[in-house]
Image (cartoon, rainbow, N blue to C red; front, side, top):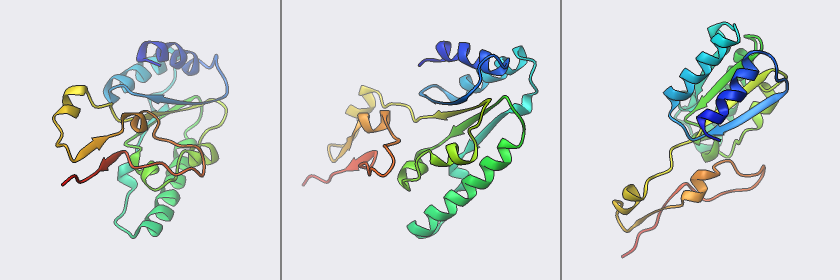
Length: 169
């Protein structure tokens, strides 16, 4: 889905026409997305505080992997509950989500602690590297573009890392 197609959905959500729980994955610049959502809220006569952003990287702590996973889940849960209390309709833009993939947390916290009728979560995915960028990398680095396109695997399934550093001698 591109930003133009998403505009129609965002406008209907902001005006209260469309109910339900909505989760979108977007490969668009964050600023363009936020501007679009602000416009949709204005058109729907909704207050600006109904648009919230959450940078997952800001929740990270330097801990051993197991503790980091538990702590990240806990902090994410607390933030989502706090954001959810703002009221509906509302938009949550989740930026820098790759730690959720790294620690195999997935998107279940969004469903458990945030998404309800009248809410919308938008996960801003990392941009896909261009062919020029990929050709400029050393031979020892390979990038699996398909993994970047689908960073959130099914529950319980472990995926390979986004960037695979394979040393060739």
